[in-house]
Image (cartoon, rainbow, N blue to C red; front, side):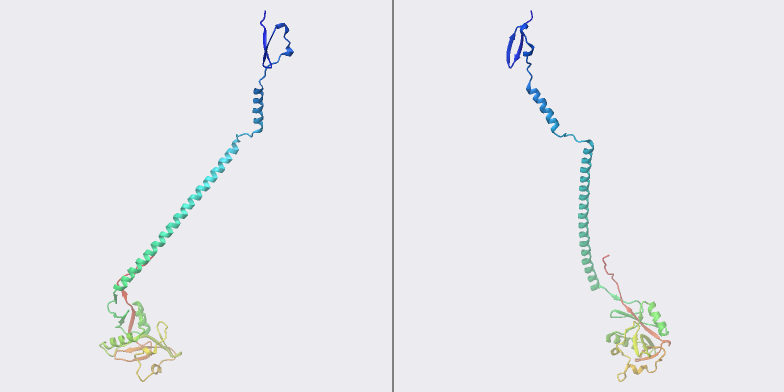
Length: 264
């Protein structure tokens, strides 16, 4: 004989004989919680977006992030280089200023101590050197010789220079010697001009006589050519053809024994 079957109906246990079991009255206990949980899982699965992104999307985001990072690095490097350039420029400018100050101080020291001198055979006066030639040549040839010595025929620019030349001419042993200077006369234009093109300052004509004007000595000048002025060791001067041969007086600037400092 079979054992009575026990079923659960609405949370109550009913024991019935085997013969009296009605299958229609049998109710199986189903856990609503399980169904509800399953439904909830399905619903959430359908409504929530997937948190897993496609691989291409992840790569795009990764590339974008990498690009931004590279740009930041490049910007940082440029900023560092610019800052270094500004600092370097400032240092360079300051260095140049320091060198200029130092150089000026050195130049001042040299100027205070420098010694002006002339080459052998030249006479020093002020800041110039004078050479009284021995050979007798034409005015043009005399000028060429002066230029070869890095000078030119003398140009008288001050009363002091004029007196110096007078003294030196009087020291010449042969009083008959005559010397070309760098002054020419154009009868056509009636003008006196030095070799550098500047006009004559008539107040500095030591060769003129007190009672005569300088132009009185130009009456014999050839109107068709330039005439040149020579000065005489015994005093006085005369205007004559530049083709005549005479000694000459050259001049040039003195040289110094020190060198100047310069910022390169």
